[in-house]
Length: 567
Image (cartoon, rainbow, N blue to C red; front, side, top):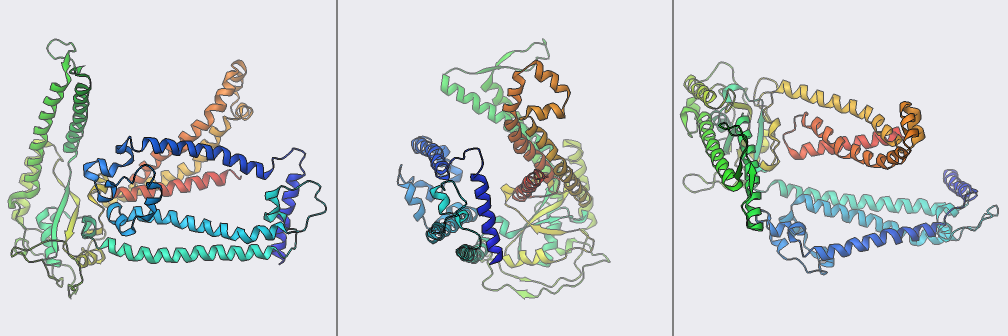
């Protein structure tokens, strides 16, 4: 009772101090009324504009129904100009999950969670406001109390029993929030398991890092996993160094963009666009050329170059064995071997498999055999053949182009085999043949695929160090930018600006107007750009994990900057 009385007394005293100030205060009800008037009007105008432009620009507001690659059944019904306002609340959750994905449903459920928690706060106010409003009036208060202030906690005098109502309301509020959170965890567990058992690439594929040189071919890596998981491995692909090929593809993409723009100009104006080409080697002068013809010819040349490079790279990757899968007889045993690991488990009937069939047309099934004396080197013949083809590749398209990296993606036919591979130790050397979950193909961050372990660790340390240093000194940058709004502070911090500001008076207003804009730019694009670079140095191979790392750093920065403002 004593603690609650202290809190009530503090709030009441603070209220009296504020209202006894000599400067007249705007009544609370007037502040609330003005807030609703300003922001309510803005919301109404923007909402009306949205209702008008939504049917006119379907590509912007209904992407899933206008872009063929993203089409889904749920997006075909536009729900009319006004019916969507209430119809969207009656879309079945399973249909939303199937068409929009688990992340969308989780986001919507999070929004509903916040709505229900806020609704409980409103329900609590039904009995709290009358309790606060019936509090006895403080005789020392000489000013009229606003109507909204009368029904707030600030109107409750010190050591009044009405504070117990606030305590009860707090327990009801947080208890209801925890109850809803428990229900969300139960829902998430069910649908997360269902999502992870779907027949999609990332649920059946693993990322293998730190692959020893003897396993850096598709055939040898596939043979190793076939020995461990007979008939449960679908594919193994080793990543290759393709920097030159990627450069050509990037240049080709720019040419495609220019060609599409030129064709659109022709369709819109009826005139063939032209541009100034590079200087001619004969006459040394620039010349005006037809854009469509020039870009079409450049696109044809890039297509031919890329096709040739892909052919050479594929021949290098396949080696003399072609597309044949290496069997255990192709691999020469060595004295060292992996310790015998008894997995010894038949695949249960309930274990889901990827839709793959054997030669006889039946669904692939198998067991995870015991692992004993698995060979660790490929045969001498394969090694020599691969070396010869790789040398030819280096001669044709670059010194490192087409050479295998120490990373690969292995796809299994069953969830059981994939889960087992993630938990097993696959090599006797530390950090060799480490296995992690693989992201979706579109979510792979290729620059970090195949980095050596030492480089990964050094990059992570550098990224962490740079983030820490930036976090410490960023508050200084933000404080300086904020000081631009106060010209007097700016004069004290930077004395030589005093003469400029006094000689050019409009600089005072200029700094005051630029400070908020510079603050937004510094804490927005610039900070995000720097932190994204630091996050990329941490070795993430998934764009999603990269964005999570960026978001975490931004949260830490906001907390650190906010904390520094108190000192």
